[in-house]
Amino acid sequence: MSEKSEKAKELFKQGYNCSQSVLGVFCEELGMDFDTAMKISCSFGGGMGRMREVCGTVSGMFMAAGLAFSTTEPSAKVEQYKIVQELANRFKEKNGSIICRELLQGIESSTSPTPSERTETYYKKRPCIELVGDCVEILEQYMKERTKVG
Image (cartoon, one colour):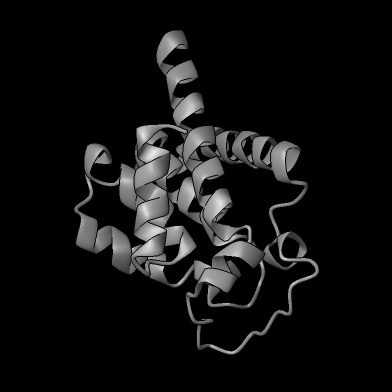
């Protein structure tokens, strides 16, 4: 586990959602203050507002990738979509899916807007904290590869 990965897991344990925990460890080095990053990524927890769609960790990773590799030019989206697809594939290779409800298979899932209480049982049953770490490590590795190439 990398230092950033451990820090992201700590953010999750402090009560930040999965998306916030991933973006939170990259935001400042990528030019965004922590509070703004927490506000932007807040809606993406629990697979987008607890609807169990795209995993919030993956959404946070994509946001960080946008800050790292995109520009404001409309034409930049093609290259950014390639990056997103590559990162998604790496996550799928490790975890089987990027869809929250599929990653939570076997766990009673509710789409209530009220998050589950963060108890010891919560952390033992759910893979979320590990997925936070996975996304951070995937993005860190990708950034290292891009630095070597660029």
